[in-house]
Image: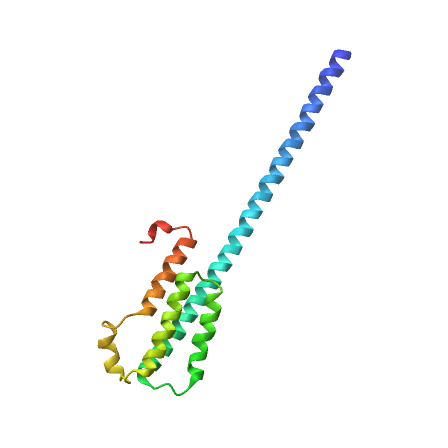
Length: 155
């Protein structure tokens, strides 16, 4: 009978330890999965916020660029949306992107000083001009691709 009791104690202890190990691993697995989902959600929100900031900056800059080509600098409030989106963008981007954003602003100001163009004159000259918006757009696109984990797509 004593032999049976020792064997039973070992079997019971093994069962308890096995159950404890299984429950612990299951809990650990659930915690790791939840943590991964939280990080993934945070990264998705950051990428979405950055994409919106890029989009706002490019849209406002394009609007200001066309206005600068067609008009003289008379209303400083027309640059306010570009400045605002540039400031928002600068908190999210790296140095190279920040320098490109500054080049866009400088180009806009330079266009206000240049000869006014009509809509028909803008289109043929667009291919000949330096395109800072295209450059920052490509830079933003490559940054988004890298952040998403597809860096092999970036040239």
